[in-house]
Amino acid sequence: KNKECGAVVDSTKASHIYDSDTDYRCNICKFKREDNRPHISHMEATSDIASILAVGNKAVNPTITVTVGAPVLYNAAGTINWYKKDDNGNFKACSSGDTFTTGTYRLTCFFGLYAGDNSTYYLDENTTLTVDGEEWTYRSYRPMSGYEYMVFCSPEFTVHDFTEGHYEETHHWHECPACAAIQNTAAHTPDHE
Image (spheres, rainbow, N blue to C red):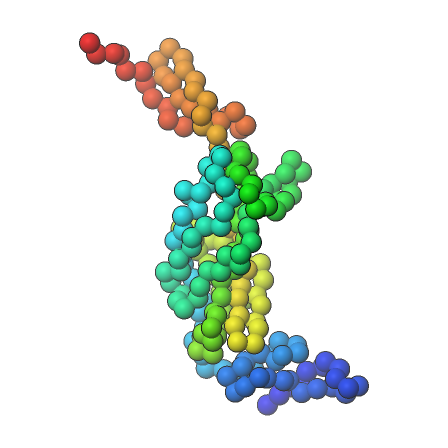
């Protein structure tokens, strides 16, 4: 049973148009007809994001491996998908060749069913994503003919520069000059001769 699409084709309303019996989205309005494919409601993944986020490293797309929700795949889309927060709190896109400096970053990623996998499974606006134990924010869903994908945005990541050493009478530590975050605090140990 097809509802009227509402798109005007040759001055008349068209019925929903599908490429085949296994195509579940109207080519014009993206109306989703009923189907019995399993819904992938949640995806989990691991990544190498923590090893990339360091002052001086190139802002490259990470390796992300979907561990729950296969056959969904991560697609880096060939572009740099990192964004850095500016002084006004707005995120600005990083360019190819940029390196990480101190600050706050987010990553936008594409996850989808490609190569016909959407004829067997489906995603939708309610599908969720967790990467390295952190919930990511849903941005958009794009059903296409032959594939479908979702766009997710990472939580904020802070990049610190802990190269500056500090010390006082009993302890020493490294401090980020941009935000005063501290790491590697330790008590002095006497020299042994």
